[in-house]
Length: 353
Image (cartoon, rainbow, N blue to C red):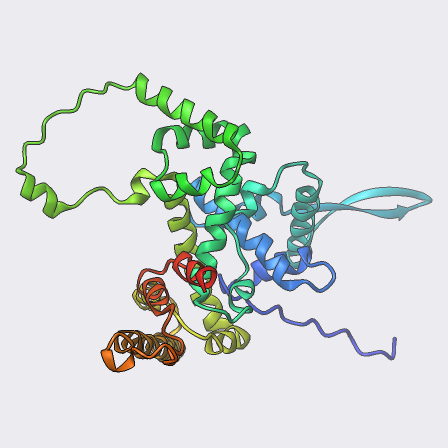
């Protein structure tokens, strides 16, 4: 008998987002050079695309794919009377799972496809929390917006399904403005041409509204997400990524530490986090809420002091040219950015100063 002790099998821990050991095995199989965050980004991004295309639970789709691929029998050579025969034998559950994951990953790597569309709406949570500069969700939104505009002006021009949707929906003023600043006027002209052609093909007659004007004003106008392709995509990606943040906050000490170290939260994203705070496990929910409240309140108090100082500087007693403005010169832009969640006001203030 061998003297060495039997190898102890290590139990695989569930992943942070789906709390599933099978997903962890898939991530570990994709993992290369110790880059765990990159592997998670690939897997969670693929699951997000599955959810978008099927409208169902991506984990259930993955389990079904595993069941379809998982082998039940395999042949092993067996020597009988000088001849070797291939004898079918049952595959145990652990080996069948390992083989299924290996085959899925290997064949996925062999597929020759463009990955821009698949990766555009996926940003690792660590990439959002690491910089510790400004509101992390504003950084997330800005990155998504920039990637989407670049994608629309570039690779999406050759994708019929995207072009059909952009022809039908169009874009809001802000995103038309961003696209105009890309210096790719031909792409924008082609999109405008197909958008106008789509509108010309429609019946342009509009029925008069039966409700009085005051009632229609009370109901409000349609949201930007309904009328703008980019706004809708960003809203969908933001809600999904905030859900990822909640699950990873519950499952990882590192994410909780990074969130604690953030300098601030803007007011709209603070409200968004509080509305979805139930996605955090109950034992961490109070810690999460207290941290978010501290981040937004600290920034709010500082802005209040700066704006108040700005107002006081117009008092006749402070008319001296040598009066100290402190940090109040760009307090208006910073406050608007804090209240709206739009960082372009802060960027504008940096340029003017």
